Length: 443
Image 1 (cartoon, rainbow, N blue to C red):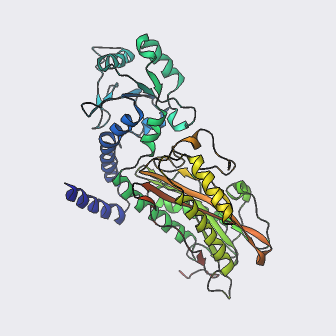
Image 2: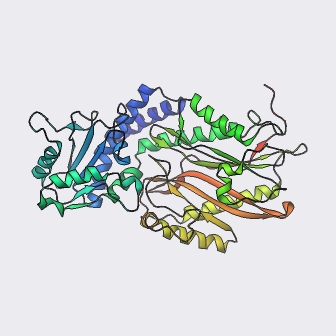
Image 3: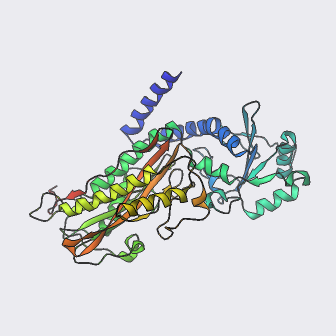
């Protein structure tokens, strides 16, 4: 059986990596992954969190962020009021998946509401609850994670008004279950992720090349919009507007927020510039988030100045420090504190703002610092690290460059996976500055 699974995944890898799939083929894969997640991941997560019934409620165009990830590929939104119920019987190792809705939710979730027999949708839901008599009823209510806080007040009030009083004290926050669902990756998803990160890297490599940049002519905005157009033409999407910024010897180092915003303005790219981009794409419901750097060669140069490459190496060093402190069970704040202390001992002027990555770009899971919260992040930073999760290893280190009489900021971000074998990058990482010739290539 294991050999068959591996052969199937090898074929799947070849298909995914060889081309961007047509919408029909994407839909098949999305629904296959959903089935695996419902049947293999969800039961374990419900056992881990002690919730034996999970109820998700949404109305069309106001979807719970978690419920949205459970919709089949042909459902772009919920319909009317959609109620999903997952009931776990641990002793029988079974999970029931119901929709208190007029329709089946794809092939994974069957409709359990006959409106002709029970016109009231809420009472139909209560009948399911009574029949299964759960010990804990999880609702998506969360103080710390917006993604896990998708139950709106109107739906909550109407549900509570119908629910018999004997069940009210069984209601708990499904925060940990919702976060677990969002953050946990399957083997098949990781195959896709590797390909998706490779595509991301390839787009950046082309953007930071003589094919796109003509020093003295091309602006940072030109590169940004080239990236947006490239993604659209490939049939993909960006989940945020990219940024491209410049550091150069005769200009002061701007603060962090300015470097990542339109306040930095559009500048003409010149020889001797140190370029940085922030870019991510979406495909098959997964997201990438990547920051890489390039140097524009001067006329007499064939490589970047050694002092800039050495500065870049310090960014890699900070990545190593951070990822070496990953440990299952540690909180994001503990990983942050240990990493910053070690970086300080290594003489690095470090800032770490690493976040979970997956079904959302800024996803749910342990936050490992924010750029303006280096002492720890209450709430999301107190969540612990679990296996089979992905992170945008996002950070920077400020390095003094005597040759420029100023500091530069080495800003990096790469997708990384934490699993039973430890940490690995989803698809490698940048270890050398990309080089852009002074003259644009002839077409």
